[in-house]
Image 1 (cartoon, rainbow, N blue to C red):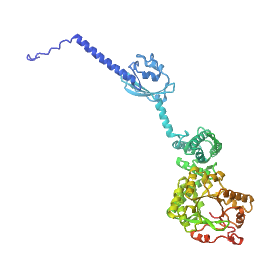
Image 2 (image 1 turned 180 degrees about the vertical axis):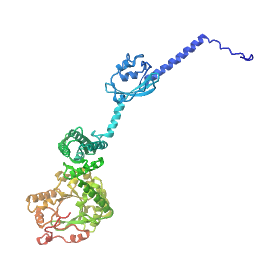
Image 3 (image 1 turned 90 degrees about the vertical axis):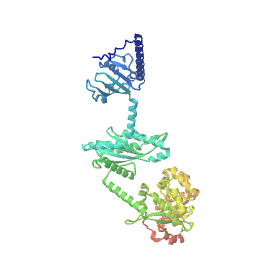
Image 4 (image 1 turned 180 degrees about the horizontal axis):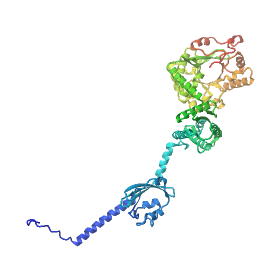
Length: 595
């Protein structure tokens, strides 16, 4: 009931028909603008998009959808059924897509689908279905994305240069092979290291070295069966996991085949190069039941193969572990020796063949081990080179020898052996200059001895260092001449002042006229090139009589002077040797050679 004071409100008067029409027209225009905006946005989407109603009839689809699926406009038209469109769609759904269950019928949900087109492209589809059966789907061509991801995955598991599996994949393959091995399947691990690879890099450049590694990888692929796996471990090192077959015959046959194949010549940009390989083999389960042990033992076998002369194969033996442990122990003792100053120098005199006067001495390193006694260089120098300990040792030898040489007459030169490792680490020039500056020894009194093998290790580095030392006044001697890679080009290219003819020519000189002819020829050649000559290793009076008339300038050997402490050298220097028969030391006729 309404109060009289508050009469009921009357409904508004009917709107003007003309005004209502204008409002409706404005609303329709706004809707059309919004629809145009939505259509424009739909066409600009980077993804393909389509929508179906509850009866699986197409409601809308953009141009990107048609382009991805290569569908004509007459197929993709509103009202077309899903089946009609699918019948015109090229390709097939992938196995990964089919393995995913669709949402339950009549429920909302999202499904991921993947389609492989006939042209090889991959399309991902994300379908969002509503409870009423209608759905909206987004489509994306992921071909390039997948290819990029596959490339990333490949690079993470393979060597970039050769395309072979890398160290990580090698471990996985060893683990997989070991699982089979526990079920009775034979398995072998072969570790390979290329021989003479570094000279190829040094001579022809790293690009040629890379090309060589690619060819090596291809030859290795051709050597193995499909069940085997070839991997590049790093540098010029490779490995092969061999599964099945009869062992050890199978691994031995494969290793021999690999050695033979890699010994064949390689062609690199018009150059023919020859390399080789050494192979170490470990068999499961005898040589290891886990990847670490198996790889370590195969590496030990490889080390043995290389020590045996390269181009060979070697199987792991338990004794190899003992040798490695002994080597580790020696390395630790060597480090302690450096810290505790357990080294001493002995000096062997070099005599002028005309005057009998001492004209030089060679510094020889001795290790005064607290338990083993005096250890000769041959027992530890190679280990010092491998571990880099030769660098601090060489630095000490240079300074101590220069300091000792200050007490000798000015005409006596000091010879110090330097290792190729010191050259490769750039240590020789700064260590020499430091020793000369610290002791005050004139540079002309110092002579550095290098071996012929030093000249083929990074030739530009060694050559540059030798020329720099020669410019400073330091003399350069070629030790053990005639035993290695002697050539006239080396004598012409390197700044040698002195040739020391190896003892192997002297040993049989009394009975071998041909050896005497070689020594005489070297003496004539050296004189023509303004080089001094010394005959090393003279141990008997007969050897001295044989080599004295051959034209060399000096002689060195146990017959005339064994290595001795610096203090004992003063008396030898003060009294020249007389080259007459009665003066030859009779007690030295059959000396036992020392290191």
